[in-house]
Image (cartoon, rainbow, N blue to C red; front, side, top):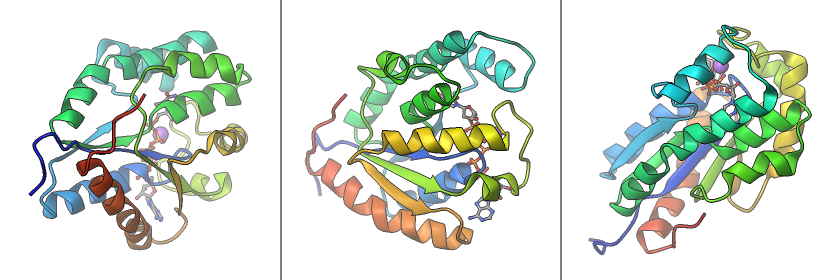
Length: 208
Ligand code: T5A
Ligand code: NA
């Protein structure tokens, strides 16, 4: 029984490679659907677009790109979804997004690119209402299934990414212990999102 202009929440999952984002976003999607919310799960990179295919080929080590170039492609991939994102949120759909601008900045700055330069192309994208950071040590993540298949899945690099993420934390972040069993991680996620979804429904403004 909420007003017609109530909006959906923009919920982002972040963390090192293999921290469990995909697992948790599909569980969160089912949970919110069961509660009667309109919800979609998205992910970045969105590999279905032309830009996304260039990114996917780069991540699979099938192509090589300058560090600045790939950074801007990741950002462009978010920009190409921005207007759809805004219309979904405004029409009341909650979006659960697997990686967003924080990934863009932390992975590129871990390569040594200037952090302010990395942030610049993200300015004007929609700001998340909640960032769930699935915290796990790089060593622990490396023990999980499928590790090492893509470009950035290397222990020494993931250690640098973890350090960059630490410098990006802000008030929208909630740190989740991602080393626990899947169901326990899920419980922490559930406990955090409901309040956020409610605040957005009640009219918290969307920001950039
Ligand atoms: N990137 C991305 C940038 O550099 N810039 C950007 O702007 C963006 C958006 C691709 C890469 O691109 C970089 C970051 C990445 O290196 P991706 O496709 O999201 O990004 O790649 P990953 O983060 O590696 O995604 P994965 O699907 O590989 O990992 P997830 O989603 O974090 O983990 P998940 O859920 O698939 O789980 C991994 C394994 O662990 C198990 C699962 O069963 C699975 O086998 N698992 C658990 N095991 C024990 N306990 C738990 N609690 C577990 N949860 C899951
Ligand atoms: Na991966």
